[in-house]
Amino acid sequence: MLLRLGVVLLLLFSPAPLPLSSCVVEGILVPELKFNQKKFSFSTTFNRSLLAKGNKRIPPVVIKNNRQCQEDSRISCSLASSQDQLIIGIGVQKAGTGSLYGLLKKIDRIKVLNYLKEFHYFDRSLLSVANVTAAQLRENEELRQYYRDQYLLHWGPIQDLPTRQPWIPTEITPSYASQEEVPYLMMELLKDFKDKVKLILMVRNPTKRAYSGFFLQAPPHTRTSMEFDYFIEEELKILDECYSKGLFVNPNTCPPPEVLHTDIKACVKEHGKRGMPWYEYHADHHLYFADTNEEGVKYVYYDGLIRRGIYVDQLQNYLCAGWKPENIMVASLTELKSQPDKFIKRLQTQLIDGPSNPLHIPHAPHQGSRSEGEMSVATKKKLDNFFRPHNEAFIHLLHTHNFIVDIEAIENELL
Image (cartoon, rainbow, N blue to C red; front, side):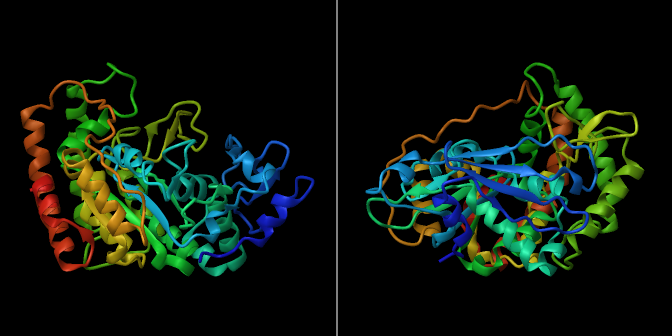
């Protein structure tokens, strides 16, 4: 069983809203968690005085709970902390994570966060808002316990299954794969029951993924394939300078994630054009985790179109953080789309301990594509040539470790 949250039970049955004591660590944002019994919701508020960088606009996080759990004594409910498993989809962006989310919702024992697909707890909440590092969590048990409890509380009390099988808290955030520090933060928070955590990495032909990703965060009809060509040219130049210097994860080394992130950022700043395309990706005004550059333009840290397709580095980084291969499922977009019925059976048999409801899924849940037009032949050739050795290294990594994977399906996707 995962750790029990005695404090939470006190909150649930208290007649008045009670604050959960916050941890105080110099320079770190420490939220205060309150439970509003009248509205049946959890609300997270933040102590702005502890923000490392000052004036960030941080909206409260409100999580709805099952009203029946509070009002009907005949209904038994439980918390995520009392369950035996946890499933986290770690990526990658534009590789079928939306369809994966749709499939997971159909499995009775799996409870995804219905109010949003992408949780972003380990990247935005911990890294961008709280400014927490894995080292700080490792050195401070109180802080680690606090953020772990807060993470699991997001599922709230959920009605127990009629079968009395434990339910499985599940979330998917595609950017977890590409953020250097995320697997280490995950390990520090979840290491007490890491063997019960299953990770899912979805991959796609990286050339196609890059093109689809380019159109993802832009309004329709505002970007063109010519702009994509420009982005790719700039990123290839940066990769040639920074990747060749060994600033990225590779099978022969496990650099500290904080150092790796800082070194990459410095290299990009030296060799990239200001504002494009890495680390100063222009942000919408409502993105509370955005920073402001020297010209006063808001931006979010962004790891590039091409780099998100270097799957071997991302997967190796999770191994470096201590995650076991046998707890990581690697699957392809083509597997999911072409044989959804077979794919969901794999999810049920390979990720879930114990029985779940039998399902027949003739068609995968559809998630619309944002690509517009065709990629130029010249750019496609450049990307295919760039990705080829990384794809081969990724296949080699899958062959040499005991991942949950159909390697032939991955080879068909990437090679």
